[in-house]
Length: 554
Image 1 (cartoon, rainbow, N blue to C red):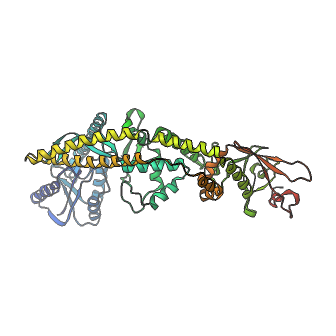
Image 2 (tube, rainbow, N blue to C red):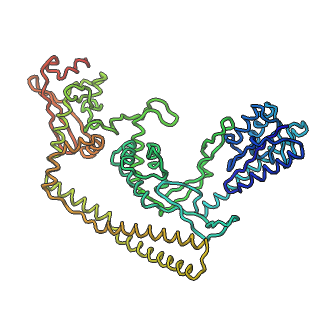
Image 3 (cartoon, helix red, strand yellow):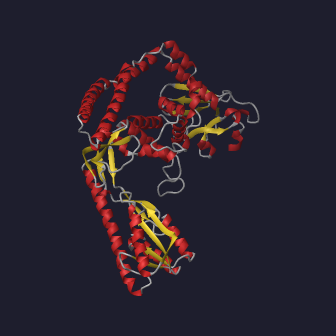
């Protein structure tokens, strides 16, 4: 009878020679039973879990079995086929359907023997229990490491792991530290802060992705696609950046039909939570600002978790992503509805959306360009006051001074830390120079050298910051910039629109009609001043009713 051989080991920590040992045991059994091993049908899977069905060696074995290329499959023991009982029985059923018997060396079981059916079932259950016991022990060990303050393989952008504690040699002679702890990576932390600040400044997630990729900002893993909206979104929602590390929130289960693993949430009682202020990258105030804007932006899109379509709390997209400088910033003084662009003629006209729907009598239109020109002229006039400029510059100077108050103390602490680490490095060198070096000591020396270089870079950065002094620009320069206010703001309507809302506050347009011979106008009330926005009537088919689009409303 022609026989095939299948071998597998599950972890990279196991020896690759295990495959050779399993194949040799199967060959010995083949010689005892009189089977002829077909050399082209020796299959193996290295470092593959027995709970997975999508193994290349196993898939090739099943495919060849269906083609009738052998009559027997030899394995060292049934757990090589699968650790999961359901999966093992499925594989045996496929081989049985193809007319192929399975013979196990260590178990002494043969699927062709009807009396071995019970033994196969018991062995499958035993293998599955072993797998579950291994998972539980691994989880128990990881929880113990977390409770001792160590990390257990959490890869998070902005942090790096550093070996801590005594270093010992494992069974294979490799140095193993007591554990690993996370520390802030200065280069990546600066990028995280930049993402958070850009988002609070009004940039969308997609625009942040674009400038990160345009500047070739490196990520944790090299990828041709670079940064993606999903990656930036995860950065903005990651609580680790405020020093809150939550572990064991989810578990992964394997779908028995497809073999793929999916994440499922665990109850909060099983979570392992640690708060470490030394691992904070994002200040609390900045974190709260991002949380607020994330909630606002989510309201501008339909659907959500467990929802379909628009919800009662759904907001307008213009409120969070203005397409024009004053989009979404104005409300009708008569009905309270939003005043937005309702016509595209002549550069666009602003009007009451309530009137468009027939819920308001205010059908007065005003040119978008005219509104922006008058409002921005008033803003520029108020900002051009030397007293206002002086006030703003003093506020900036005070804020810059506040941001740099910690620099001298930080420099002193870094210098002390660098001196201690350089002394430690010198001790390592002297120790090795005396001929008492070892592999563990060499590893510690490399780690110390890396830390010294990192401290020098941080210290140099702090010293450069200390040398920066805020210089007040000339008044003429500021006035020249203010004269081009509208041009500057229109370069980025999205961010400028959000900025103007903060500056103007609620912008309420009250329709006013003085008399039959006078032209109608809006009176715009803002936190800056009361402005008159006068719109000359357009002669034409609309007569004194304003734009032709008014005819469409009635």
